[in-house]
Length: 547
Image (cartoon, rainbow, N blue to C red; front, side):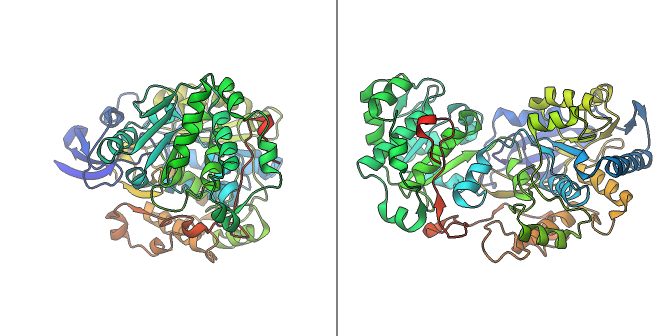
């Protein structure tokens, strides 16, 4: 029986596992005590790994128009038909859908092929949400400032999104452990979590409460005036535009709680020097914006135990955002500015670099129905996007699906390509706090199943771009990803994997968890043109809107 250190991969925590593998795909999983994300603990989500050993229902061979085909035939047809679509309808006629559980290497190759060679940024990534955009707007770069260790160092932890935390059981355990062993005070906006202070606020009102806290902090001088003056840009008239509807009485009425409870909450939050605020996509963009603003205005950011802590969706959503595999970024945390485009085009040897951000969600579906987008390649599991995918598949003449499930081959896709499932994947994942870890293959690939990066690479090579897509193993892609993050990076971007750009194949195979970015925003330094953070609009509240 072999023992392999790998990852659970069922949520954004990035927990390590010790997998004991035997013949006939026998598998036993336990937590990896050496992994910093979980220290040997596992939740019931890891049970999904043992279920993946069953080959019943697996797609094991390529299918073209519902019939089994060779890989050579499938790849040749994809290359020929994508080229025909581009020639007739232009570079924006191809779209990509990606699930949230691919490896970083898969995302990198998919993004490079789309944006550098097919000339399209139409990438539907429904797990991405708004937090990345908000962090980029506030800090100048999509960097999650908190780490799991901040939970252990905080004086107070504010839970602003109960469902998001409940979706990460081991993180909740860590929060409760800090409360029990260190006396960390826990404040919960909602119900269902044991805490020192719980406010049963009305659904959808958390942003209103946090905006009220912002106003209170400004009025009673709980903000860090020196930090704000040196490191934060606050719009003129910020306080006056925030004031309507955010006095204590209006907030209490909107939240469905007593004014005394609101006052107690305001007082409690004002006394904690080291505050961590946990929030996710489920609470909405306005909650995330208000939480980020709170930490910026009170200077509780860029130091241990004091940070806004965003919980991403997608098992490797952080890795996808790092390489830019979504519609809003170009690559490696770079935007579509002229200088960034020139650098990326030169580095990739791009044949047809995209010029601007792409469509996603409903707008992309409309473009498909209007005939502007004629081809779709969908990669990875994404149960939440089932309805969107069904509509998109019906709207385009060419539909390609990379999946491990045989039943999807009967859903009307033009081509279905057999993907590796999680326990057959090999590459890297970035956890929710920028911790990069190795996912190692537990079993050989069954039938003709292949990694997603391999399929993308083969198609790119067949389309004539073999000089730019020369990957033979995941380490080749990881090295290139690292080099791109460092390429012409003069320190203005915190994402810089320079230390791993020359990593050897043996070192990649033995890679231990590491975190990029050190302590982001240490000393109040932000990767914006003037080095200052920006206060965000609170999008969901008209009366609090900040231009």
